[in-house]
Length: 192
Image (cartoon, rainbow, N blue to C red; front, top):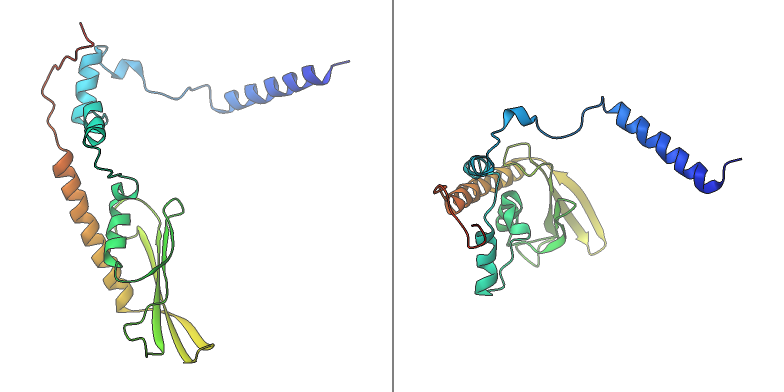
């Protein structure tokens, strides 16, 4: 008779071997024959292709102590969306969920009509199908007698175009700012 501990071990062993066999026997990773064996050449190639990062660039922000952080500001679509609707009060903003919802906004306080905008991010890439924008209209006869409907039309298209143009500018600025050509062999004080 198997003990519970041995039974658990046997189940885990069978389950893990089934998972490994279902992968076709291939382990993730690259083919070593396709890459240069010299690590310095691999590092140079990765830096030129933009795959690496320089620790000195990351440490520069710590030296100044200016308190700026690149949390959501590194996503160009996110920044462009917030800049485009910066005149509206925000109701709900969830970076990890990829959604921005404004509060009801009216240009005139006495007006009985207001709008609300919802921007959902479908991808982080700057492209025309990256955003799902919805504009809602609210018309009130009295304070609690309101009709809410989704507005289709030019405002949604105008918002999408404005956000994408602004995001494209941010992408170009980021590329220009971060471009540093690789200067060949650089030795640090830790290398001999």
